[in-house]
Each structure stands twice: as structure tokens, then as C-alpha cells.
Picture (cartoon, rainbow, N blue to C red):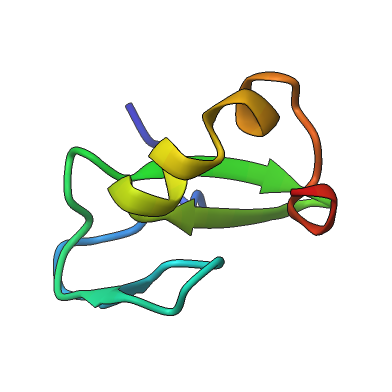
Length: 64
């Protein structure tokens, strides 16, 4: 549930993978989100699968 003033990714906003740059018109269910240094980043299913251990270890993406 969102309250007034909170921002969420809407279906109308294209989303870009922070690792490889792949874009999608709406946020696919298979993509992963991560909050790093106060920013919400999204990773496509391929990048998430390739870096699963680093994501689970909560390493920032420069360490991948």
C-alpha cells in the first residue's frame, strides 16, 4: 500500500537494468530491485541470475 507522496515504479515508466542497460516498458515480475546508497536500482532476470550470490550477500554492484 502506498501513501500520498511515496513514489513507485508505474507501468507507464520504462525501466532500465542497472547492469546491462536492457529496457522494458513495464517492470517485469522476473526483475530484481535493490536499494543501494539510497537509490532503487533494477536488474533484469539475466543479470540477476548471473550475480545471484553477490545480490544475496548484499554486495553493491561495483563489487560484482
